[in-house]
Length: 279
Image 1 (tube, rainbow, N blue to C red):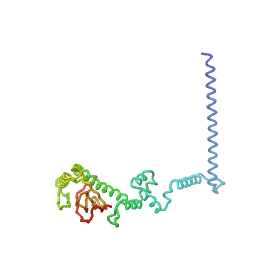
Image 2: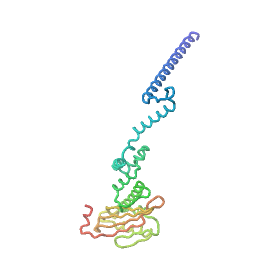
Image 3: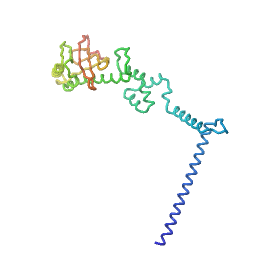
Image 4: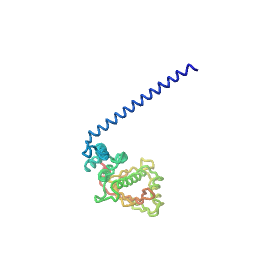
């Protein structure tokens, strides 16, 4: 036990000495780096004339802030430095999903992606405008989102017709006594129950080759007009039977966070060769 004590003491002294040398070396390196940084700052920002030929702390602080601002402007604001027309033209190549994702990257991109001009260009590219004089109250981005929601509901309406799902059709109509359905035969059906019963009869007829289920329908020239919590959609529809071309108007209302159809009106348009109207 006595023989081990000198070895332990010697080990402790060596460790302590090594630690002290490391600390001294680290302090010397930090001091050297601080001096180098100070010299670099002086080279970048020459001293201003003042009392005693020295620069006050306030001048140094202002110089550092100017340098930081210049760095931010050079590196992080290239989008902001572009002309608005160039930014709008560049963003017009993005689709709806890409423009939304871009707005979630950072504040600069969010400002660029929320540009009303970019959303107006995208709206005219993706949708048929019902009236050229439309000026959205809440901007083109909000108008685009609402139009897309209505277009999605309208597309779902015709998907339900193709599938022949009476349950899905009953969910899409507003359960109210004023809803109305006017078919090409001229029959008028008013009220939720009467409308759903009519669709049940249509789906039960079916179409030859469809085993009594859905009806193959194509739509074109879809146009949307929005007014507060109501919207109407006009389109051309072609049913894959010998009925020909239909002119259709669907009216939707917004209730409890969802768009419901409240009016469907289809009329037969006489065509010499209706089967070729879609090319």
